[in-house]
Structures are given as C-alpha cells and as structure tokens.
Image 1 (tube, rainbow, N blue to C red):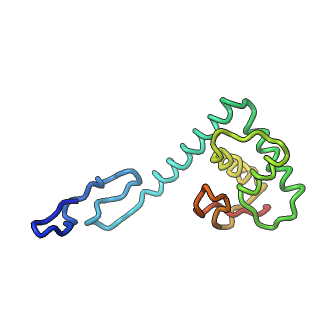
Image 2 (cartoon, one colour; image 1 turned 180 degrees about the horizontal axis):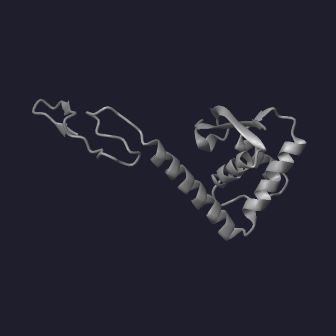
Image 3 (cartoon, rainbow, N blue to C red; image 1 turned 180 degrees about the vertical axis):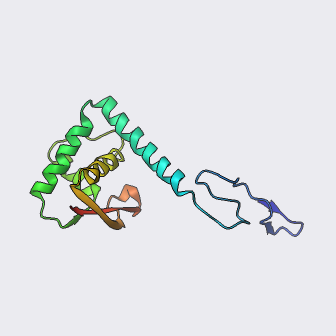
Length: 140
C-alpha cells in the first residue's frame, strides 16, 4: 500500500495480486475466493501430511484408519472431532505422526467409506491450534 502526501494510507496500490495465494482479487475489487483452489490446497496439504507419516512410519494411514474404526466401536460420543480420535489413538499407544494434520486424511477416508458424516464446525481444544475451527463429525 502506498502513502499519500499527508501520511495517510492509500488503498490505490495493493500488494495482493490478482489470483494471489488464496485467489483473492485486488482490494479495490469485489473480494472473491477461488473455492476450487482452496480445495486443492487443502487436499495437497493433507496428502503431504499423510505421505510424511507414511514415509516415517510405513502403514501409518491404515493403522490410523483402524483406530478411527475402533473409536467408533468403543466411544459413546454422538458428535466428535478428529482431535478426539487422535487423542484416543495416542492413549492406546499409537504412534504420533510427524504432523497432526495427517489425521485429516484419516477422517476424510472415514467419510468416503461411509463411516462418518461431517455435520459442521466447532473450535479445537488443543491450545496449539488457537481455537481454530475444526470439523465436527457423527457416525453415519
């Protein structure tokens, strides 16, 4: 952003280019988001996280999926987050992946398999996540 002669901030120059990181147009235009790009970035991030887990711990994704199924068998929770499934798996001695976001792929796999259904959003309880929104799930 540039500054005018009076020291005021001018909005006529914007460092965000068209099709910037999230596909946001310049600020002086109507803001739009590229939903397809956002989905691609999400999917790419989940793939990187699960690939890293698999590289460090071959078979991790299948074992994690098994813990999701075990959680569904043993838990009475009506609604739950991937965070709860992760905590359950870790309490059973399961290996922590290099990046907790690898659990996103596990939950997505559970949804595609018809085991769980995303019903909305809630806030994360992990303080390191800073109360960011996380998916809320229920059994299918």
